[in-house]
Length: 542
Image (cartoon, helix red, strand yellow):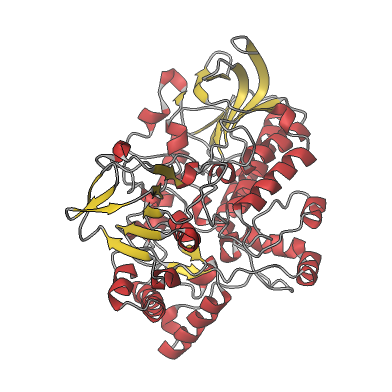
């Protein structure tokens, strides 16, 4: 009902997994809620990112909801790492199974959210004219939802087909016999390049910064193995929540109890460390960085990890010069999100694939017919931009969000994001950010972190209902202490040396602040639970 103000208990922005589960929990509390979604379907990142080879980097059986035992038993994942179409189908199934669509407004982008201090309510407006008054405003906008378009001269001059990985055409792209260029070698490109290479007549990869990637060792799931795994699902879920492998999942039929952190690299001989790394490499997956406990803390151990992967690249890529260009040298391994691939490095052995090192010779401009480097134009029919996202804060700062005294979130975060627990921002009462900056979010299996945040928020809102409280706000002191703690944890690791999107380093002009919480999902969960048990320590109610 455009232009007529409507009243709800809560407004949720985003219909990805966070928005879907938040809506489900609020309904169970008897609250009225509406979801605004800018796409025309549910799924969030899995709705937008349809590039070739797109799949999850967490085990399928872990990258799924745990709140419904019936749901997790009924849904059958086909592969160890689910593809984008399968994950989108899962999101659609969840929306339909729990009848969530009736409270979701699609093709509806939020324009502004302004806090009314007198009424203690948020006034939320959409670009199409929706006007909502709600006690709670819950941002389920996702950490990787605003594509980063590269600032390259002449990009709009390209006369061929131009596609961005994170805004992929729903009908797909036919690369048959085409001359294709890919700019970027982050996670999306590392997944897409092997698939595009199989179809394209010629593929040219323009790489500025090489990334570390480990093999997925993906495969079809054996139904008998899955049945045995699901018999122990509750114990597996407990491990994910306690932080084993940051919740990315495991392949054990009998779940291991959460034990002490894996031994440090210094406790192993060189031969023992190599054997451990080889075992993890052969098993595959993002848990490679957890092979020993100090991989992201000790420079010596980290260098051993990097040397191991360098050796794998050199042994895989036939051309020694190409192999060296593919070996990352400018950041500690794991300080950027480790990539998980299927035959990425082998792809450079194909006769139809070329690698252009644009760190040595930067792209000069895009022309109507291709990409100019060192005076030469690489002629292309199709150009693919795999240049990442304005991560964690991008979606929030695209909206006009105003809190107490009309202060904007953009001004509040001008020097970098500040938050209490990654859930709330001082000066913005009743506004919640699911997996926001200051929480484990992108350093974890997102489904594990999403469920933890939504459950905590639902319990907090239920507490407010029972106490007839109209307003909750983070105290400035608690927020400052949490920000200091997040920075202290990050600075005890090698993460800040990565120069990655974790710090906003991929976005011109964005403040360099390490955004996620690096202390682990288990420790973070314990802290959040302790805050709630201590009468919501650090929060002020009215």
